[in-house]
Image (cartoon, rainbow, N blue to C red; front, side, top):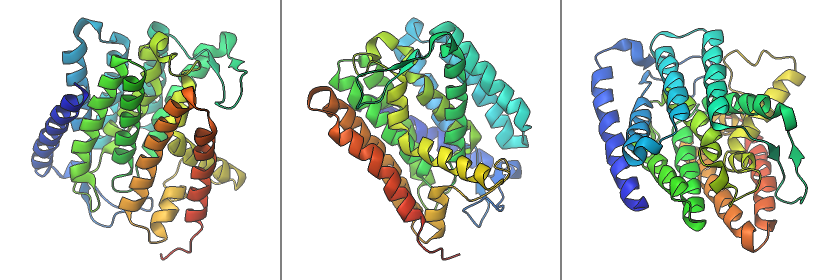
Length: 334
């Protein structure tokens, strides 16, 4: 079942993006012109993440039918619409954030919130209490924008999407949760189809429509079936943090460094660790593979932790950011 979903969504995503690329070639408004934040030097078609959105949502509705989470569909469609408009015409930041918060609040209101968090190496947990809905909304919005911030070089967001999707596919299969094995497979196929066009040198960019869609989807996946997902880990928010570990770490680390230096983080920049690595001369392919494979390794470590112990998970959580920071300290070539 899962392999069939991967193949079918791969072909669907491939077809959607091929058609989009042909249509976009007629309209210069979809060209991403290089600026001071860019890691590309020639105009490239952006917004091709719409292929991922259409593939995932279409397959999700077809597969789950009346059991599909309507709050998720309403929220993610709202985010995708405003994000695609931003790819086309540039929507003001405050409007985009308002939609992100509204979508997150709608989902949390109807589907529930993250109530606690615990680290894999501690037996105790921190209960959010009455703050749970607020923390959940801000976490979801943070994940949306973290994924968007990290989509800055060829292949990195798509590879992360494949890695996290494969992680959920493995976790769902290992713990008998077909909802997650199927959803993971859908996302793997859709992102893999996109990567055919986005692998270095990229012919298309994901755009905000794809990155915000994936950021939101990964942030809320544990809440789509909260009872089932607790068989994997008692505090579901931890699974999202673990699978998105390097994306979240790079985002938080970069923002804290900018705040410490009194730099305006909302302006275009190339201060992220992954951007520094690319500027040092590393290929976009190598960086994208590192992020994607780390997500898969973390998923395998979560499965291992349930029966054999959390030591591998702890080691990956600690050393993957260390590798990232050391890699980013290499002397720049530009």
